Image (cartoon, rainbow, N blue to C red):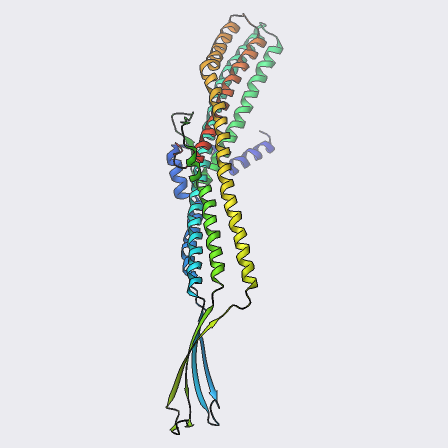
Length: 412
C-alpha cells in the first residue's frame, strides 16, 4: 500500500470507529420509549414546565415593608423617638389575575411538552423507517451485486477463451463497479442516519430496525373534528386564554393601591392634658391609605394593546384549525397516491421483475440474447424493485404524518 493511502485508511478507522461496531436490533416501540425517557431536548422541556409551575408562586409578590426610625425635636425642644412600619400592596384582584396568567402560562408549557414529545416520536419513527428503507436498498444492491459478479465472472472466462469480446468484459466490470459504489454510498448513509438515531435516543449504541414488516398500514376512517385536539392547536387555544387573562390583569391595575402603617413615639414634657411625660411613655397611631390612579392613560393603552393581542391569538387559533385540516387532506391524498402505486408494484410490477431476471439469466446463458440485452433487462428489473422500495418509503412517510396529525392514534 502507498504511504498516503495507508495514512488515510488509518485516519478513517480512528475517526469512524463505528465501522467495526456491532449493530443492535430494536423495535419501534422500544425506540419510542427510549426517546421519551432519555432524549435531552425532552428533558429540558420537562424542566421548563417545572420552572413555570414554580414561577406561579411569584404572582403574590408583596413590595418590601418600609421600616423607619426618627430622633429629634419632633414635638418640642425635647428630643423624642418615633418608630414606624408601613406596607403598600396592590389591590388583591391584581394578585389574583397575575396568578391566573401564570397558571395559564404553566398549562401552555405542559402543552408545549406534549407537542415536543409527539414531534420527537414522529421524528424517531421517520428515522426508524428511513433506516429500514436503506437496509432494504442495501439488500437489493447486494442481490444486484451477486448478479453482476456472476456476469463479470462469465465475461472474464468467455474473454479468455475467445467466446466474447473486450466490450462485453468492460461492460460487466462497469456494471459491477457501479453497484459496488452504490453499496458503499448506501452503507455510508446508513451510518449517518444511525448517528441521528443515536442522538435522538441519547445512546452510544448503533441500532437497526427489527420490525418484521417494512410497509405500514393505515385506516382512513377518521373524524376530522378530532384534528382540533392536536397539541399544536391546543397550544394556540391556550394562548387565547393567556391573552384573555392578561387583559383582565391589565384592567385590574386600574384599581387603587392600598397602604397601611403604624408608628410608635415618645413625647417628653407636658402634654395637652397638662400631664408630664418621660421617654418611658409611648404614643401610637395607625394610618390607612389608598393610591388612586388619577393618571391612567398609559394603563388604558396597555389594556387596548392587550385586547388587540387577544384578537391576534384568536385569529391564530382558527387559522391553525384550518391549516391542520388542509395538511391532513394533503397527507391523505399523498397516502392514496402512494398506496395505489405500491399496490401496482405488488400485484404486477414485482412479479414481472422476477420473471425478467430469471428469464434473462437463462436466455443469456443459452446464448439467446446478447450481453447488452441482458444488462438492459437486468437493470430494468432492478429499477422496478428499487422504485417499489421508494414507493413504500413514501407510503410510510405519509402514514406517519397522518398519524402524527391524529391526536389519539399510536405511531405503530
